[in-house]
Length: 240
Ligand code: ADE
Image 1 (cartoon, rainbow, N blue to C red):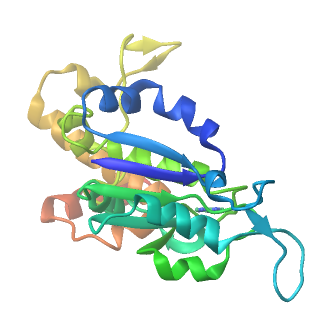
Image 2 (image 1 turned 180 degrees about the horizontal axis):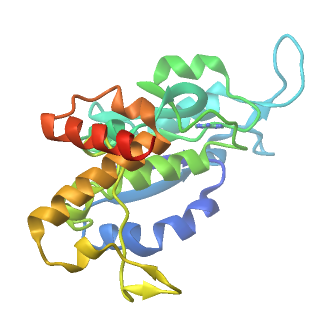
């Protein structure tokens, strides 16, 4: 797939694109990431990209013309266009799964002080990464691109992505590596037993426990199997 990122700060993406899994995914040809500097589409000789808001108020607003001229230079009939904005729908794992299917994903990084609202008519959706305000959409674009790229086949070990948080509606169980005793803190015995069925049940229980403790809202959104319901009842009993 191709991901085009429209930004006023392309330098912010250098570390992101040239490190670890994201770098490897590009080298393997799984994804082609391009960063486009929207400033190149400013029309005046001082390269102004923003202006004062109509109706008054503080701050500068990113100009429609700059964004739309940039978008039109890269958009095709097969592009899916996303604008990062705190007013957008919240980004979730399911959206990353949707994004990975697009041949061409365009992410427009919103501006810290605002963007001309007429831009909304030219994009497919507005996405926020959480209920807080960032200085710009660049970090949000990296979050979305990262969550999407790691789902591309061949990017990371598929079993590890199948087991992780949110993939089955639950949070991931805790993991451990050597040594089995660190400063008196021991790795749960069952994980050293080699008994696969018991390990699987222990992990399911811990996954349910972590979700129940940290994100009980997630438990209301999924249908638990009879086995999971029994484990959850056990957890609640043990933690009374
Ligand atoms: N721009 C500023 N804050 C944002 C957020 N929370 N999500 C996406 N884009 C943003």
